[in-house]
Image (cartoon, rainbow, N blue to C red; front, top):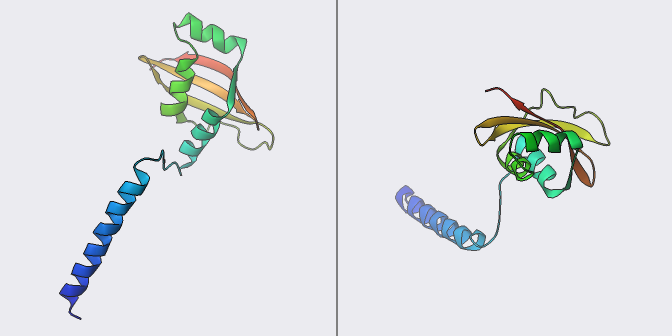
Length: 125
């Protein structure tokens, strides 16, 4: 079989496979979160959240509510250099991101069943 025929058959099968994947995966809520930052944020988002009094006070002083934390867990950046990921029980992560033109930095204690926001602060840009 000539090379040109092989390329035509290969590309035809490849295109049919791509179209089938689009139809199969279009109705499902699939995500591709394989990086360490994405996996960490997704793990925290799926757990029940608790907030310290300090966190709630900082949020209310800056006209924010707990939905700002949810937004930060979706769009924020995990600062692994400031996080403590060594303990086996509850790892502590520092997450930073922009919420309504303010930089919010939080510290989360990520345990097996809950994720507790222990600290929150507005940092200068």
